[in-house]
Structures are given as C-alpha cells and as structure tokens.
Length: 509
Image 1 (spheres, rainbow, N blue to C red):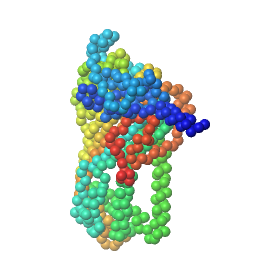
Image 2: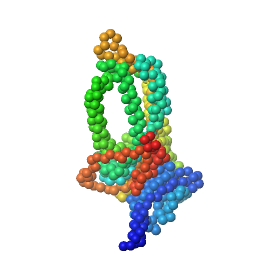
Image 3: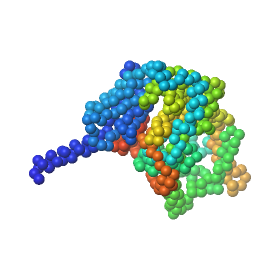
Image 4: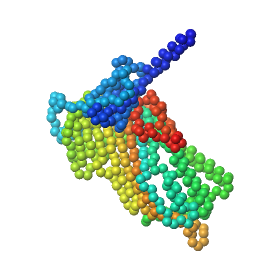
C-alpha cells in the first residue's frame, strides 16, 4: 500500500469515528422573552434523551452514525414542539415558541370535571398510573453542597497563654474558608421495586467528586500549630473544662501531645496513619451503599407516598386548588392546577395532570414558610428553603415512572454565646486551675444542598432477575481538582451549572 492509500484510509477511519459518536450542545430560550427554558425534554429516541438544566442548557451524545433523517425532538410545557435535523445542528441557541391550548380540543374526549372530581380521580388512580414493580433504571445523579459563612466573630477577653491572643484568633478567622462547595456525580443502574421500603441494588458505571482537600490541609496546619502551643504550656495529666452558657463539659487532653522522644512520636504517627487507612477503607466500601440509599430515597420522596411532607394529594383538604389553565406536553393535554395551603401547610406550587388518566405528570413546588426553626441559649437552626420540580413519564410498561427530579434545600445554623475553657490538672497540689481562655463567639453558616436526578431508561425485570443480580461490591469516585468536560465526554448527563463549571481547588489555580 502506498503513502497516498494509507492517508486516505486514515482519513476515512477518522471520519467514521467522528460520525460514530457526536455530541450536540445548546441553550433553550423563549422566542419572545429570551428567557432560558429549564426542564425541557430533548429526545433522540426512546433510549437516548436528556433534560435541559435550570439555565436552559443541554448536552446530548449520539453513539451511532447520524443519518439524514435523524433529528432531535424538543418539547416543554407551554411551548410548541420542535424538531431539529442533526445534520444541520450548529450549536446555536434554540428558540421555542409559546403555545396556547384551545379548550375545545381538550373537551372533545373529556367531560368538564370540577376540581374536586379531578382530585378524587388522581387519588383513585395513584396505584394504577404509577409503576411500583421491579425495574432497572439507568440514571445520572448529582449532589452539590454549598456552604457560606455569613458571620464569624470571636472576641477573646481573657487568655493566660501568650500565643493564644486576639491576633492569632483573627488570623485564623482570616484564612478560614468563607465559602466552600463540593459535588458528587454518578452514572449507574439501580435495580429493584420502585417502593420506599424495598431493597435495591446499584451498579455504578462511573463517578467523580469535585472537592477541595487543600482547605482541610490549611486547617490541619493550624491544628499542628495549636498542638505545638499546647505542648509548651499545658501540663501532662491535665484536662479541659469547657463552659458555654449554662452547660459545661470535661475533655481529656490527648496524651499523644506529650511524646517524650522521636520514637514515641513515630509510633503515634504510625497509629494515626493506620487509623486513617482504616477510615479510608470504610469510606470506600460505604460509598456505594450510601449513594444507593440516597438515590432510592430521592426517587421515592414525593407526593405518591402518603407519609411524605409533599402531602398536597393525600391531604388535599388542607390546600386550595384551582384549574388555572390547560397545556400541552409530550403528546398530552394537561390541567394546570396551582395549589396553596389554607392555613399552616408548608408548600405551594403547580401540578400538571393528564386529562385522560389523571396522572400527575409534573409538579413544581416551594415552601411558603420555614420548614422548621429552633433557637435556645444562643444556638439557632432554621430550614428555610425547599423547592423543586418532579417530572414523570410513561415507560415501556405504559406506567408512569420518574424521569427527572430537581430539589434545593437550604438551612441556616447560628451560634452566639460566651465560651470559657479552663485547664485543670489532676495531680497538682492546691489550686488545680492552670490556664484559662474566655471570650464570645458568633457564627452564622448557610448550607445549600442541590440534588438532581435524571432516569434515561426504565426497563422491567422480574423478581428472579433481581435476586440473582450481583451488585458491584466496591466503587470509589474519581477525585477531580477542577471541572473537566472530558470526564463525561461520550456520556449523557445533566449539563452542569456555572458553579460546577468554574469549580477549582486552590491547588489547581
């Protein structure tokens, strides 16, 4: 074979590979308002589809060669459906036109039900409409945690240890991370009955974690600095009496602070290293089981369960409903039914109900008051935010199963009180008090937890299939120091938001 033939063969190979897998990305916008359109369905075929994220962005990968007849089917509540030929796809922004529904179309095959009749039909058909059988669900799951310190004041009034002064405290507060976030992403298959009480099996295909370990290292350095000061001033056989407000606790001092020689220090280090390895091993083994529990709980934590706090269906008498409009979504006419609490319930929102079978196919909800509050002796905690979207779609069993869920939880924790730390020694004659630290602390921290789940495929399996299935025994997520778009290349996931795309550890900057 001559050089020309080899070059042609290589070119054909590259072309065939490029057409064997293609990725298409865009942002969905309202054609009139130019606002982003979240939670739209972008479907290639029955097995390949994604949901646009809360910024209207999506990324879909097709794993076979594209034909001239192939297109993406885009549908979203309240918008005209749109088809885009893949050969003409250029990654430009996609504009959707709003769609109005003619009431006469809805009533051709449906009687004019009252809101009470609709609610009765929803309840009666819960067991019929939704799939509670054994299934395999291929899914992508993401959890994001955001921490922000709103207030961080420590005023030191008394210190008998010279190094423990206000300057040291201020320097510690200065380097203490004021904001932090970490993210875990999982692509996997979960098996079992779609039921809160049923056991599940999970095979993780791929997983990663975005986490800044360097912030822990900075705090470790300060811990070493504190230990050096303790060795200099604190006596062996001492203990601490820690008092804050009305409460007092006793804390023994770690004997490893007082190693007499390098051999003892080395032995202590080896013990600590062995313990850390043991903890790491437990963490690795537990990752699969912990995430399996989280995913299964997130799948089932919705209005179908009677004991759930999203109880607007089972406890409908506590809410006010109205038929506000009609809409069209995924070949279905739906009732648009806003709801709000009559008195003290927690949530308001809108549910979308199929006019033919009375299945709730989508719910948007948010809390109207704090979910819980606690304040006592300077310690406070408030769960102030719970908002989300749940979308159901028919599977191959012609039953509704979860297609997409997005939920954001917010919590604020505060502490404002005096604190006093006194060193006392067990074997000192006379006055046992050795050193004292006294001051006031005031911290306020906000935590945001955002969870997203998309189910790409739901396939029926038998109970026998489930029992004979072997679950992956151990999986450890890949640690990433910054967002890497290549990590999920070739996989369909939920497009990450701006915070994830901009994530970087201090080490990677």
